[in-house]
Image (cartoon, rainbow over all chains, first blue to last red; front, side):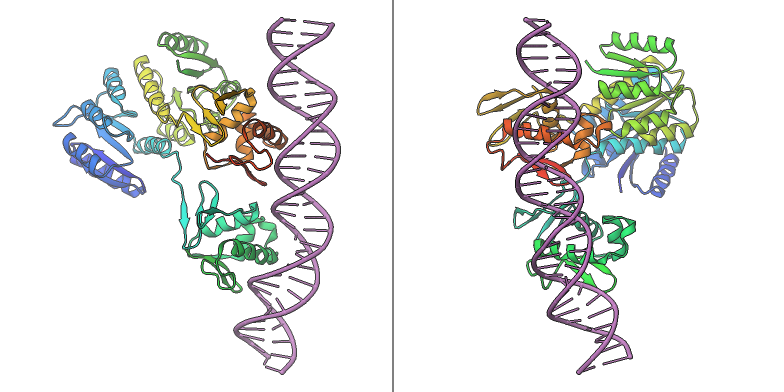
Length: 224
Length: 224
DNA sequence: CTTCACCGTCAAGGATGCGTTAAACCTTCT
DNA sequence: AGAAGGTTTAACGCATCCTTGACGGTGAAG
């Protein structure tokens, strides 16, 4: 999911962090000193950096400052020093958070989540395309041959459910439940009416749909 | 410059923070409990919130969660509790930072700077233009054919929300919540009245709007 | 071949939502 | 107190959308 660059000169801590982070679904790369850290951050920009201040080659705040010259990636600082001055220096150099050793792994993970939550706030625009039409889930728009296609609210909801499960089969109950509500599980009429509507607006050949497919007796399927 | 909302039930600490923060150039407003904090945050949105978890009326994490329902203002949590669980709960509820009492004022100020630095970072395009009118978000002005257009405060707020999300669909609830407040989610009348007003002032052909579009049953969309 | 189940299509009604206008209400300034 | 500008409320015509039912086609089973 998210890529984390861990910078620390203690191989044991590095290994422990790598294992823990990977167990929580992060991609992890590591560096043992400031130079390689900057290099790696440039070659494969991570989503967040965990940086130990006590590095062998460079001062920690110097690393942050250099990083900030060309990157705005969130930086979480680890340090054995509890002094107020150290914290202020690191934070003012451009760090986003600062925790002191020894620290709880729970807390580290929670702070990591907080940083990632904020930096990844502008949700990545989910756009799904086929040969004949394009669905922009973020902007809630559908276009065909450059032209915007007008969809009614119900049409959109139905298309959205299908597009969010590409290639997967969506059962009739699932569709009815998500679009009309759990109480409409028997009204398969709706599905036929609205599927016809969607195909007329999106499929070049209504009689032979290529992306909005029917699985008789079961449900429907969207193929990109 | 930046507005800080400080929430704490200890009047002494509140006073100390107010003085310190003001001495460093912040505008300070205060609240002694969660309810008034949420109210103040809504009426005069601050740039950052400093929140004590030990409030008399509401659980601290509940305050954060409610706040996050309609605001993404950075939240720095103060707490007397050093436990890892408390930190994780607060951070996962939506807090951005967490420091424990007693804390150094230097550190608090540094963390405050770090939060403000990041949250004030994304300065979206200050000026957005269409064929028929231009919106200057920074100067809070709208012009059409060189002439300034006079907008009432409510008209402006509504236009601003739409323009800040170009091409994206803004739901009715989103608009009502951001312009009138979260409690007005049902008053779609307002939207119709003010959208008509905006179109009369900005659209050449009111009957066929080209930039302020309606998505029936869902919301509105601004197209540059 | 007939029957049945299921799907796609169509059209008409009724319900909902939108745009528009105008008047009542509120605050602020003169 | 009166005036002016802004906000809220209510009402109406109109367009759009949802629902419903009927009809025909297709394929599998009897």
